[in-house]
Image (cartoon, helix red, strand yellow):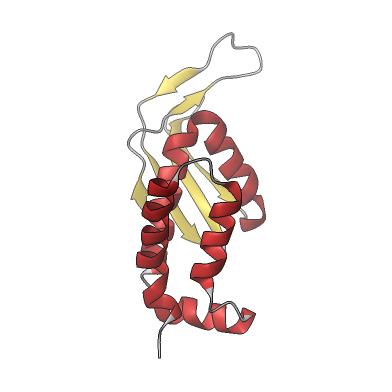
Length: 142
């Protein structure tokens, strides 16, 4: 489990005018093929109620879309960092790329970037080098 210290739990009811924030922790976990958001909130009576939200991978596109609506820059940075970290696992990726016949990742990535680019040649060179640094070790595994 990973704590989400910047997330919050609010509770409200059908007849309540406002959402009331609780001071409880939110954590993230993965199990049974889904992402789980877990938290505890005070119950109507005495004690606490544990709540778990399971997010199926089929819903990831909507989750990513919502993240981009809230803060596109932070969402893209977070996804880029994690994708780069995942690319550091070449054997797994190599097998996936080999199955799809996509060992020329660099060329595909740069062509896609170039078709959508807005910058000049300096930016092209920087992007080309970044793509090469990320992809070259993966596409040239023996």
